[in-house]
Image (cartoon, rainbow, N blue to C red; front, side):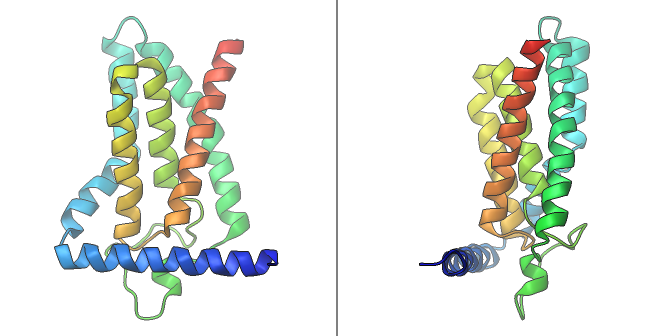
Length: 179
């Protein structure tokens, strides 16, 4: 099987999962919940939590904020480079007759910036506060899933964003340890 055939097969599976998720989502009337969960990943909450920990958690808070800022400084340019190089159309712009619940902020979908940021934050948070790891990764997964349910990302966009976020978080932790 050629690479192109594999990509077409992967895209077909990705699209089927996307439609399945959205059909279920619409039948359950979960749009308000998905919007709320998606907004958790808009970025403001990460900054507020980081600043709050830096101000009120004496032992690790400031270091957590510094590592988080390094991680986001690594992730954001990589995210933008990937998104503007791959230029994958969002499902709401590509699939005939499909309409997203929200209007996306940009044109391309791969990788998901919301998933990248959520998994980056969860990775760094889990490193400093291991008791919060499970909850952080569950919230990150919910943010990623909400983007599919809102109709603005395919599942593989979320997987790629999650991978980018985790790798950026881990790399920032290693860089911090080096200095």
